[in-house]
Image (cartoon, rainbow, N blue to C red; front, side):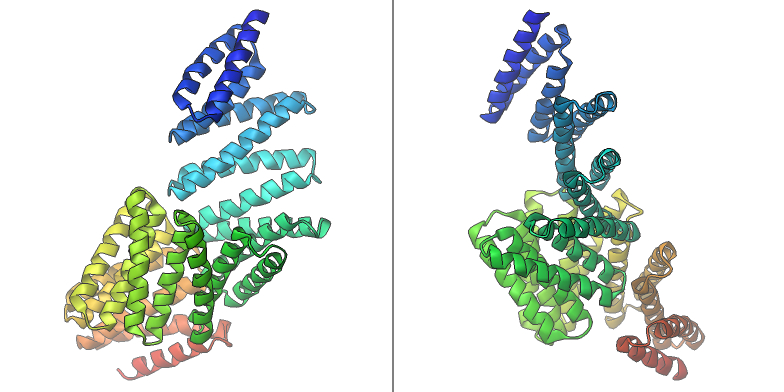
Length: 492
């Protein structure tokens, strides 16, 4: 038995050495020998250590789901031993290593657009850290890791269209980071994480139609990043984070018609991303985030009437996103990004009276989202985006004189948006979307001379806008839309 243990240890060390050198095939062969010897020696500690290397080899070779099974087995084994012997340093180390590996897999699955697998990883990681915190509630490392998992879980749930759950995760993560910053105010890592989560929560609140709260969170995040950059101006992570928050503030300002201020934020963000890409041209995150800002700037320039400049920005964003998708054609996030940029180009080309080109972009965008919804039919984000593109294409079809086809599209949009509204009846954005669709249908019926149908749709839209206007009396855009709707209704 002792001889077998010595052999297992020897093969283990050789496996580790080959793995570090990147000789994965040789490492796999050596790992099998180590496993066989460890089993003969009943060396559970060596076997468990080998599982971590095995998981790593699977992960490196792209077998992510198999890697997750291996890491999960090792994690549960370590948890079982620690429940009986909580002071075991070896099993504590095994536990931490596997938690880090599973968390990393969660990030990989999310980036690949494999949302359910990512959720499994975050569920498992969060559950383990919550168990650890019950035994040691003041442990700063456990708190930080739990908060990081909650933040990433929020990102995932947002992409899955589960907005209330995402908001809950962000708020819990931010509360932990704020406590950690109070306990250790000089800890820059905790400050940076608090900034990231505050930015993410701001984006979530913006999507929920709560711009004042969103602005507060964005300003908090930007303030943190600016302070961090004063102490470390060359830190690319802080630069990238600041650019993301500037982009998000730009979106809020644009939504509130503060166009010049929004343009300033977008251009500052874009300047940062362009410098980051020059330093690291293969960095997918910089390319993707830079394309997002280009796309947003293109939308803004269109609102400002600078159509040619807007088209250049949107086409550049589309080029970047299509290149990213070519490199990773199964990536759901990249597919979604391409679709939304095509949609934005459709709007732009329509405003430039290039109707056939606009129709082509809308149809391509619709095709992508219809396929995405087949893979995840309950995804609220996909449903919402599909509704938006269908609505835009219906407007175009109406302008082109294809009235019946336009009506069919509007009917589909209304069906989608009512379904979404049922999931969150308090959501201002969802309510406005329904009201705008009803308004569009009313206009269409009016143009067809069907006054009763037009009145019915305008009346239903009016009821929603009156309710929202009473709930948010300070919102001037709502008041303007309400007055316009009254004029349409009374003019019939």
